Image 1: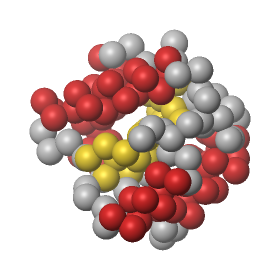
Image 2: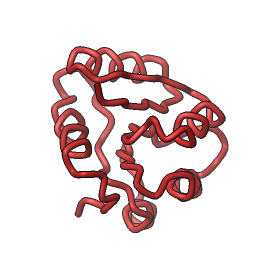
Image 3: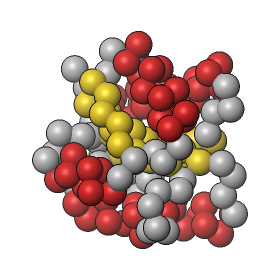
Length: 130
């Protein structure tokens, strides 16, 4: 069973995504804290992370950089509301696998579902999707 980490501050979004991916058959871990996120990644159990756009006090770009330093093969799918274009370019160049808009309702989650499937099927090359 594939291990998926959902690191998201918003409880409703966290629950919505967890339910979606549990139904898809993934082993899902959810967290709203940076220490738990790092612990899971350092254990090398997590191969794919759904990362919320706002997470603790660390800026998104710095957090992605830190996570990639912990495990450079990690596939990070950034799930956020709209980001300013300069920040979006910066996070894409940092090695995220994909950037998806946060779903506003359950039926909007197909994009994230497909991105997760791709990330697990990608061989974890760690390449950014363009």
